[in-house]
Image 1 (cartoon, rainbow, N blue to C red):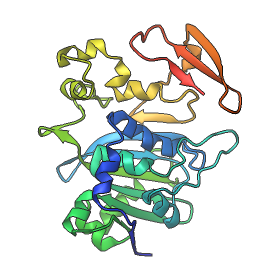
Image 2 (tube, one colour; image 1 turned 90 degrees about the vertical axis):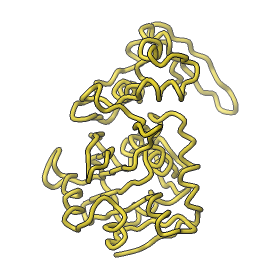
Image 3 (cartoon, rainbow, N blue to C red; image 1 turned 120 degrees about the horizontal axis):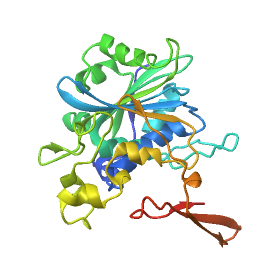
Length: 298
């Protein structure tokens, strides 16, 4: 099925919507959350950096249930969400905006490959594509080979199939899942927003970029000493992303060692919050991270 979907939004909305993420790691979290949700049931999530046709790219892949055409369209659309709690596993997002805001915060263009038990599909969410065709509304090509091959990083059907086959490689030859490639990564003064070279197994925020987004740090050369590591290291950030980790996160080929916040606490304060229904709110302070705010667990 070849369909060109019009989403009824001005193309500039893709950028303005992404500015809700003032901190780039929260954009990563949006994509991780999608794989973490109970309807996906991914056990592993891979984040990596690669080069395609001379372009720096971020890749995200999970071994979850995958998507068919309808689910792909809903993910690329605005304001649609049918997430539900499954066996006590509560979905992270409910507004249907995470993929759009997160992916467009990291780069201008994203292509999504997905494979479930019955089908395979490809979708393109691209600001560059919309600019070049002078679109008046956000248009999403889903399995439209002519547009995808012309405006994405891939020029042949074989190249597209190779990316779908890559979903198999980490675990088995018959797996399901989703693979996302983001390119035209955000940069500042011709410098990428991320540092891929300081640590082979991490994605870090360079000191000068970090300083510009965290104005309280006056001297970028002191950032690494004064700020908590989770502010500028994706690996450290992912290690404390969830209070109850259910999924392995692998960054650039190396598994993230998660930290159970509830097991490493020194001071605990509990209070009862009663807007309408009583609920316990816990505040945790980890001694070794004296510069970090307490963790709130509602």
